[in-house]
Amino acid sequence: MDFTECTGVAIGNTITVLIRPLYSPMMWQCWSHDSAATWEPAVRATFPGYAQSMLRLKSGPILVAKRYPLYSVNVSYDDGVNWDQGAIIDYPTWAMGLMLEVEPDVVLCTYQNADTSQPLLSQRFRV
Image 1 (cartoon, helix red, strand yellow):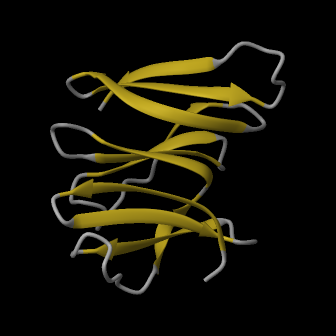
Image 2: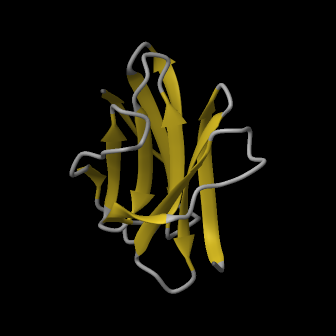
């Protein structure tokens, strides 16, 4: 599978990754249970997205922030098996971001807007 973007999180020997195949609006997901020695086949995730950033909170949930639709965050409480419907956190026309857990279950999501001469944007939210 040719892909343009890939991001992942790990816990122990298990790695969960989300990828966006070239020319596909939908995210795809796959797992490795042996520290990336082998991978399960990729399956289509339940949400679209581009330019994704993943974060596993210390309490366990996995978050994916991405553009399309708009700038939104999806959450999984079961290691990426199921995902919520997502929450829109901003309305930029374009964004590339990164998330950090700044307090227990509190996330700072920073992202640049399409106009790089403008300041960096950010949202702080609790999961």
